[in-house]
Length: 176
Image 1 (cartoon, rainbow, N blue to C red):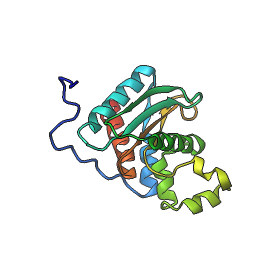
Image 2: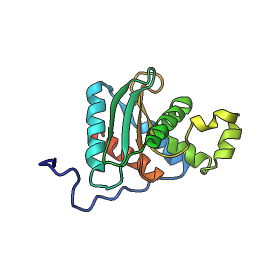
Image 3: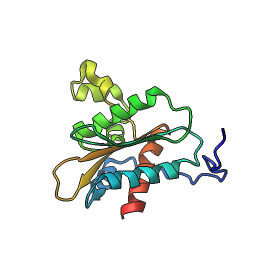
Image 4: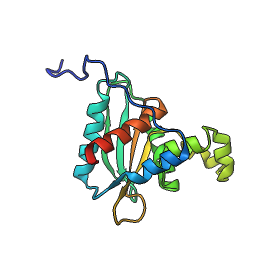
């Protein structure tokens, strides 16, 4: 059964700009992404905008937004067929990194220059290192006047710098 609506656009997708790789710039961007409030409606708006932005790209991508304190999903979807269970594993690992260190996974990736061994040793993670991912795409959601991270948005499926950059792009377009 075919759908009357096209699921992806035949137009050329807008390129996703590369994010900075220096820690100062990444930290400044992370710190600037503060919401006045973050409700289920905000999660829906953000998740839907991310999905609309990513639909023209043929690569299957997972978009997940969940509350920080309960792991309660507020938004979870895929853009195209072909997403594998491994994508959800990446979502969980990126989310766990954001919650433990309170910064984007892109920041952690650049801090360790992608060196997972150095990351594991720095924090004494041992066998639990596989529970975390220092690959871009996990971003903390902060709210003015609230201490800590209130939610985490994760994109998984593109190149890691694109996973990160598209979230920043859409948050800026919607809220700034």
